[in-house]
Image (cartoon, rainbow, N blue to C red; front, side, top):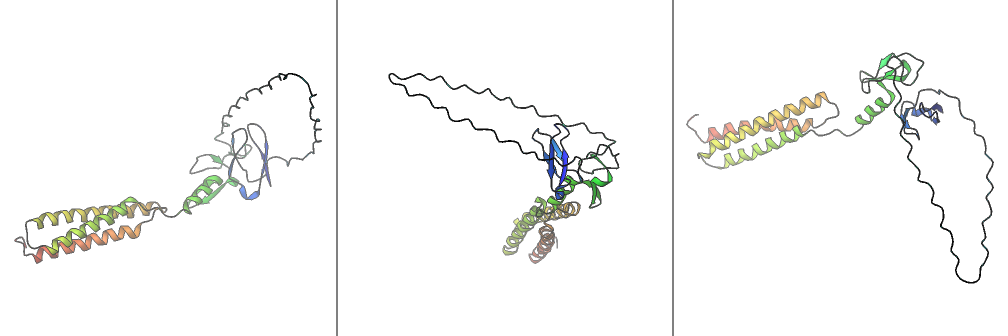
Length: 237
């Protein structure tokens, strides 16, 4: 067990050793980070004598008219205890150990810590709670970015226009269909490259396969547009 006290109300808390680095909240409202080792001695439990329960009060029986009982006293309203303000942090001292000088600064919360209170995670120096939060984020399923979805939708819509262009004969509307398909193909390429760049910068993002589908679909439909226009024997060919 790790024993430590609240810096505001001095209440002693105990947590298992595997919870070092996590944050708890004291009954006074102050957030306390569980240190890596005990900072106070383990409390001794003193058995208090049980209070004697008074016998129930028996009222005498009365004959005659009804008696008027006095109303029960109303308990005083309990005022909420004001929440304690967070303790000041010395930038030159460890956040968990006031007697140790600062050796590192957490890359996420930017609080000072000593060597025993930080870990190296993915090339960054993090404290215990921030490391746990980063691990929890990495364990989440990858999020599909909207750029990858837009790239796939634009490529699919371009394929529909190419199919209409291939089924119709040589008409004036072929120019408009070819221009609309080319616009959707450029949009699919732009959104696909954007999604791949975002997934490369953030490992928690997914959707690379969807973005590649949009890129490949746009290139394939572009080749089909050129083939359809050549097949219709346009004057510019």
